[in-house]
Structures are given as C-alpha cells and as structure tokens.
Amino acid sequence: MTDAVAAGPWPRNATFDGTGLTIAGVPAAELAHRFDTPLLVVDEDDLRSRCRLVRATFPRACYAVKAFTSHSVVRIAIDEGLDLLAATGGEVEACLRAGAPASGVVFHGNAKTDDEIGLALDAGIGLVIADGLDELRRLDVAARERDRAQPVLLRVVPEVEVRTHEAIATGHDASKFGTALPAALDVMRAAEAMRGVRLDGVQAHVGSQVLDVEPFLRTLDTLVELAGRAKQAAGIVVGTIDIGGGFGVRYVDEHGFPIDVLGRALLARLAEGAERWAIEVPELLVEPGRWLVPTPASRCIESSRRRPWRAGDACSPSTAA
Image 1 (cartoon, rainbow, N blue to C red):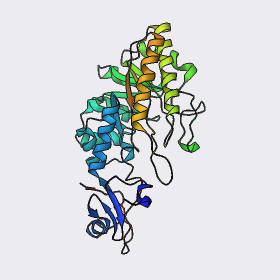
Image 2: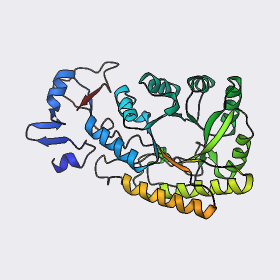
Image 3: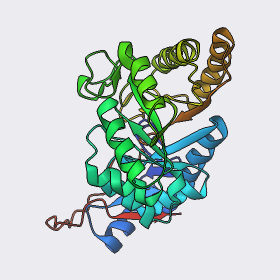
C-alpha cells in the first residue's frame, strides 16, 4: 500500500497503484461501474477484524450504530459478539429489523420522546442510558405502567476536557449532556427509590474523535470515585461503568488510536480504583462507533461519468469481502 493510502482512513486491504484504487481485491472503478456513484464500500474483513479486537480487549462493547446504520454492518457487529448502541428510536428499530436481540440494544440520547421510551420498553431493550432525573422519572412511570423495572445507567458529566473540536466535546462542565457531577449522587439515590427503574451503573462520554488515552483514564477515575462515594454514602452498588466512545480515527495526518493500549490501561486503572474505594470491580463497557467503521466516514468513490445525485443514492453500502 502506498503512503498516500496508508495515511488516510482506508481499510487495511486497500491498495493504490498505477491502475487506481483497489479494495479487498476489487477495483474501485469496477464497483463504480457496477453500482454507480456516490458509493460507500465497506471492507468486511477489515470490519470484522476491528470488531474482534474490540471484543477481545474489553469485557463488553456496544457498536454505536450512528457511525453507519447499515443492516449489514449491524449484523456483522452482532455476529462478532458486540452489543449495539442506539441514539434514536429510529436506530432502535433499525437494530431490531437487522435481527438484533432487544436485550443486546442500549438506548441513549438526551432528548428521548415519550414514544421512544415506550418503544424501548415494549421491545424489551436491555439497557437505557438516562441523562438525568427528569428522564428517570418518565422512565419510571412508563415502566411501572408495563409492570417492569427497566435497567438503566445514569449519564454523568465527568468534567474532563479533551482536545477535539468544541462542537463534539461533551465531557466538560458546561456540557448539556448528562447529570452534573455534584448532583449525580442525589440523582442516583432518587433512581434507587423508583420501582420502575433498576440503576445498574453510570456512564460518561467525553466527546468524539478523541486521539489521546488520558481523557478516558481521567473519566474512568471520576466514575470509579462516584461509585465509591455512592457505596459509602448510600449503599448503592455500581455494577457497570461505561466510559462511552469517541475513539478517534486517522483522516489525514492524525496518529492512530491505540485501542489495545487503552484497554489494558483502563482495566488496570479500574482494578486499582475498585481496591482503593473498597468496591467490587464493575463491568467495563465501551461504545466504539467511528473507530469500527472509519471507511464510510472517509471517501465516496467518484467516477468520471457521475450522474446527478438522487434521494436514496448516498450511503448505499456494498461489502467487498
């Protein structure tokens, strides 16, 4: 592979030489001729290898389907042992239509409608990430109407700054997403008192396209400390700590994100923190999206005979195996 290809967001089976771009042995020009353009091409072998690395590195991982909500990609993630993270009711439905078990779908988002909450509960979604007390109260009412207790994680603002674009930084103290850290313990106490909610743990998300390991370690430290304080002050057991996703990818000259290094560092830090706070080691959950499917976010194949774009044409996935 030439440096020009290797430096960009290309799958590992892409090559570029005098004949042009080839993806997993299939010439891009041939794909463009067959399917027309714009066209997104996913290297299935590359995707599966990334899923397997994530699955081997972390105790639990959810593919954030907003990265590429293709039924084929969702099925591959399921096949490789990942759960799914949906940000809207439409994404929940897409996961279910792709064949995902409802128990393996995690539903988050800071503006869930009552209809979306009802959809999640009726489908039997495994986990809901709630942004705050108002959403927990709405979940509680809806779940009790259905005679069930919905497992939830509380999203917390970890007050961690990251080096990324300000529009996609979500962990700082001015973030609109999640519960402010000083209020988190009181909200956790309130959740514990709700019959329609089962508080399983806490979650945080510092932002997107994060290329450094350190912000995730600081986020983990914050959540472990919160778990320790919750146990000491209120007897609340935090069984799951979700540090979110946002693992960056290489577009032009960025360095690659070391998933394996992050995994080892997080698990070691989690064990140390749990010992320090005298709590059982929570399950670690991560939410990679962009890192698993960098290809759809990178390039569309453009042919010299490109016709005008029509609704429904863009992002039509083809898999080059």
